[in-house]
Image (cartoon, rainbow, N blue to C red; front, top):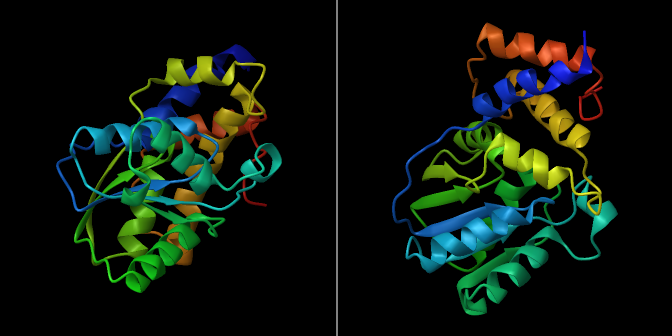
Length: 221
């Protein structure tokens, strides 16, 4: 199997992970932290376009960001959003979470402590993380209504983004993350962390091809 075939398989995973939901005005924007600063920019764009009056950034340090940043994901995202024009007083920061379950649990705790109870949310995450975040929220925060969105970039755009040699994330890492997330979508529903998501055979076959090609760094052991 030739390694140059990896992109045809990786794009299958990209298209599966991305849900393409239509969003509307909401009580709050909840942006999940990561290494991808485009998520912060998308949340700021939504705020500035009147989709909500409140942004919540959630994220401490993850496996990747603990190696590349000396500030938490949520604080990094806040810095980006305020530079784009979002008032600091309209941002809440949750800066302890290190995984998706903690993002949800700690955000719920933060809002309860502030006596803020949004009924509906716009969720912002990476394009290739939409489905996993959707499935986790549906299981672990059942009482809210939400739509999920992400930065307006294509698979090819992200390949260019991760081709930047100044970044600590490579194209190989990018594809490996998508492979790991697909495995977790299948595994975590059985463990009770997420609702079950149907995975078409052609998507799982693309996953298996990428595993054979060596995109295994983010798989659960």
